[in-house]
Length: 394
Image 1 (tube, rainbow, N blue to C red):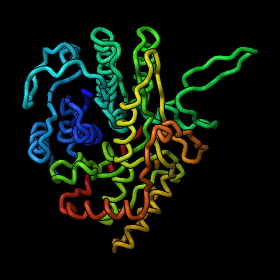
Image 2 (image 1 turned 60 degrees about the vertical axis):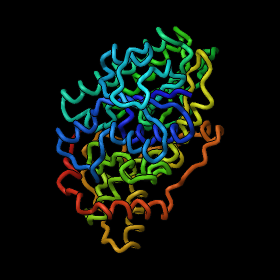
Image 3 (image 1 turned 60 degrees about the horizontal axis):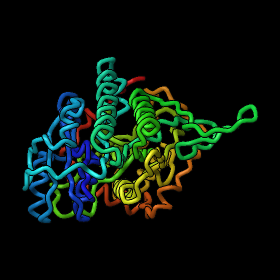
Image 4 (image 1 turned 45 degrees about the vertical axis):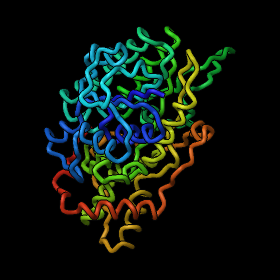
C-alpha cells in the first residue's frame, strides 16, 4: 500500500509513519512544522529535543533499511497538496526521488490540534480555522480530481460530540419524527473553536461522500497518552514529540510530568469532566486496521476511537498513586476552571467498531504509567515549571 500521511511530524503522525513503514508499506509524510514553530513562538517547552523530520527519516532508514519519503510544505496551498497526487512534487528527502504514484490511503492529521491555542486570541482562532478547513478542503478536491477511489482516513475528535445527556453513538443517529425515519450525523456541540473546526471537517467530508462517492473513515479520537512505541525502541531519537504544557500537552502526559517535578496536579474546577482515552499504540492500531479495511465508495464511516473513560479526578488519583509508589511527593490541587465546560455530566459513548476490526486495547494500568514516569524522569532537568499553566481562558 502507498500511504500518504499529512502532518507526519506530529505526535501521532511520525509514529504512524514508522508503523506503516515497518509493515512493508510505501510511506510519504508531509508537514509544515506548524507545531514545532508554534512551540518556539509561544515559548513552551518540549520534554526532549527532536531531530528534524528529514533527519528522523534518515535515522529510520539507517536502522531498518526502509524509506519514509519526506515533503516539507504548507498544505493550505492547494498546489502543494495536489502535487502529491499529480507527480509534480519535490521531495525534501527520499532514496529514490521518482514519484511513487497516487496513494491508496491518505491519513489526515495535518491540523492545528489544540483547543487552548484556538481560543488564545482572535488571531489564533483564525489560524486554526484557516489551517484546518483549507487543508481538509484541498484534500477533498485533490481526491475528487485525481482519484476518487483513494481512502481518506481523517482524524476527528470525540470533542465534536460535547457532553450530551444521551448516549453517544458512533457518528450516526437514527431519528423518528412525525411518523418518518431518517439517519443523521449525531448532533454535535463542540466546546472550543478547535473542536468546532473538526465538526466542519466532518461536514466537508460528508459533502464529498454524498456528491462524489468518496471513501472516508472519520476517527473520533479521545485524548491520547504515551511516549514509546515498538518502532521508537530502535533509537530514542525516533520518539514522538512530547509536550507537557497547557497548550499542546494532553492531560495524562501533563500530569506525569507535573508529578515528576512535584508540581501540584492541575485539576480544573471540580474535576468531574469525563472523556474517553487511548494509548498512543492503540491510535496506531486503529489507523492501520482502518486502512486495511477501507470504507466503501460513497461511505462516511465513523468510529469512536477510545478504549476507556476516566474523569479528571480519576486520572489525578491514578497519577498520585503511581507517583507516590515511585517516591514522588505528588499533590493534587483544584484550581478555578479557565474553560467553559460542564464539570459534572453524563457521558456514555459507544466504541465497538474498532474493536470489531481487531484492535487489542492497551489499558491505563499502573505499569503503563510507571513506564511513562521512567522516561520522563530521564529528562527531568529539561522540564520548565513556567510553561505548565498559563490560564488560557475561554
